[in-house]
Length: 189
Image (cartoon, rainbow, N blue to C red):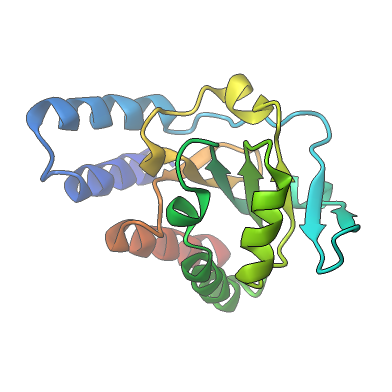
């Protein structure tokens, strides 16, 4: 397992090798720090699904997803343009691709630190995104885990024990996307 993680770290370092020397050192430190780190979830996060009816928000039980063999965690903070950062159509494509590889066995856990439910509702309804999400108004997930400051490292492939297998955003970087898909293929075969 250690060899596999070291290989993954080297691949990610290669992906970011065009960065300045100081930035590469920060990324190397970050990768070592997060390699096999356990992500801790609050006791019972509430996942919701926005509906077309303005009066309704469906609460969804996703506790079994937290106990899945593998899962993808996406943390989105409240700074900047959520729609711009998130790129929901690209996520939907990636989720479809992962579902086809893993036979829908890998859940995607979207955590949003936001106090603006109206903005999120508009975003999800306009993009026809009906996947359950956790709106973490208190930013508990980040406070517990102290995620990296670099947004590109707010997405994680986790194992059953919620330990980080891969870190990086597969939507923002094609090579990171391939790393996720490659790792998922290995894990589900």
